[in-house]
Image (tube, rainbow, N blue to C red):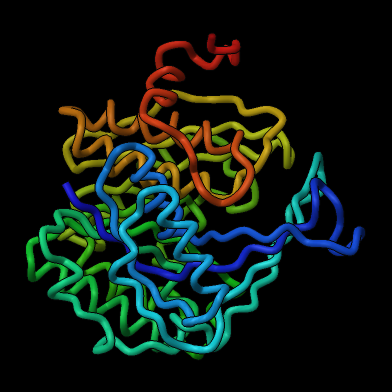
Length: 341
């Protein structure tokens, strides 16, 4: 099995620990981005994953590629073009103080590329799955056009397409609203992933669920999955993550899935003392892709994805560095946290 992901990887600059921006005169530099995180997560789970993006041909771009290679991701289809890598700044919240993200992504290498610069025939050779997100179409009109060209080509090749809706209000600034673009992307999607806010703001689906603090209402979540499936008749399945944000450090975590035949609810985790929640949704997406291709039942796939995502909350940085054995161990033990000797 070969999975291809496409999107923008960024330089992540984070204040140390739980400090405010530049409280100390330093920032921790790593790399991350939704679709890159999925590619790394799949590689850690033992899946052949290839990541497609564009990075500048300079030492920062080379370091970025090197980080992906370090975890076994195929980087051979990455374009070396453009003048800069996108950047995001992260101030990690604690207790009742929320985390803060600041983007610096205008005119990044990916945002300025054109669809014809990518060799889609070569990119999708031997691929069985293609994963994108709603983040890339938000960064620029060019990136939206490339995303639509990519999913269209993937469908022509018979490749399964998954999309993490990932609404980012700070990015939709180039004149089009998210539902306008995402409705075009969704014509080619087989599996949709998101949360209640993504469904509302990315797809324009009306729901009674609050986007501030979701809380669990099975009927409400079932209704929103049915609305999405009704709006997009070619969509096979939709999974929605449920995060109860009690504080920045304490979240409830679970998910539901509607595959048009049954509505499934996952196991639930109460996650305390969160280390880093960035990338947890990407770990869920990767776990779901893995599970759909590994297990006979969607319930097993859903539980695997939730467990993989739960573990990502314990790992600093964007990248979901979690193995299959660790996920299976959590599913078996329930997460005692005892030392493995």
